[in-house]
Length: 249
Length: 287
Image (cartoon, rainbow over all chains, first blue to last red; front, side):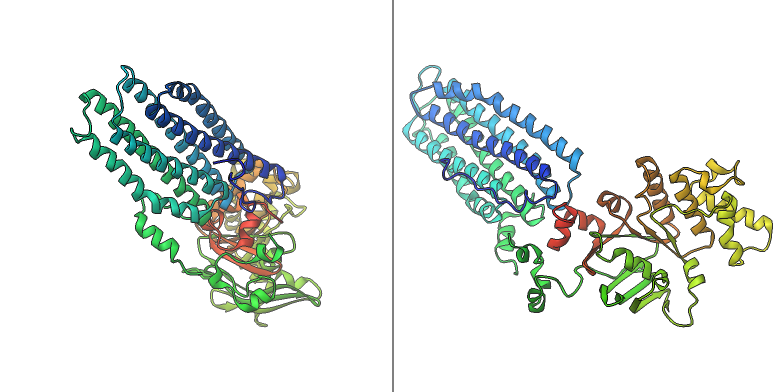
């Protein structure tokens, strides 16, 4: 996502407090979370590029950058504590703070998965093993879908946009399908003329990508929580989409 | 966001065309104004100070064994409403109260109702502790004595002790009951006033910002006391502290410009209010 297309912060959920410092604290917290999300996308794209391309330096770069996301998560935690201690948030502010704390956790774990993909790539490519084209195509498609989901989830956080969160839910079957396609290919000896250890490494990579996609869904749940005041974790997605799309008023 | 948009309720089902014409103000209260076991039932209460209307068509139940907190910006009518509940507004020149306020089914504004015993049944604790310039004992004994609630000195002594115990003050003052009540600390004076209120066996206790003049420790003691008193009395409290309302009450009522905008379980009001005005107020966006 380019800077020009970047998330636009909707002002009414974070801004407008009589105490303007409160606005600044919430904006800073949300900025940290958005930065974490954007880095997750970069890390995932870098790890997948390392797997699919010739240049392994992408994988090393992903591993080098992983601690930066951990530090951002620590900063976000500190900001959350500070806001709670100073402001005792209520209502939508309380939901914003709780949701951002949870989203920081989701983003941090998603970044761990990106690093796992990078490590798996280094293992797979250690002896210059070539990635079979059909598997490569499948992982590329899965990676693109996953990165798109994470990008959308971060854009949804930037605006606390429940409509965008619903789009993420609606696209989840596509993520599962992409993951399933890779799994099927890895289970087909004709398409995967690789030793079992290499197939195992690719399975782990596909699993990690699938998990990153799930984190995007979990982030979208938090967006709904803030915008709608409903905790939708563990709710059936189809019923939830139906309920939110066709609510009265 | 325009002023109009910011005032429009989120629960659009409650908006009428007339509300929108008035700038998004609601004609009715959002939330359930009733409670299963009400001690006081208020309906259609309007109050005027001269030509100025301070409260508009307010309806609310005050439930047994329940604390209802009334919150809202200054001038919203919450204290005015509280003072209607024991006819304290009768003492204000030019104040006119209309509507129905019942205590256990009895209309308190009925001409046959004497406001003096009513104010014993519906006691009040004020913002600033106001002990009489008498001894600690006399502060508590005064009410029961003038209402003829005891028959002997021993009975009165027992009632004073019980009241001071319920107010959580007995252990601190039992050895100096003859000393002036005004010599106590602010928090102790406020608890003395609560003991004085309890001594006349009220059914409802009204508290108008009872902790606003107290330090955090004294405030915590009063809040703990309110929670204990809830087991025996119905309590209505006006407070400017959102945290206090959230801590001590089971129901919260939000007032704005004389309207009762929203009533609900305190947990719901402070986590997921239905009206935009309530949310803006409790999150510190105005007020």
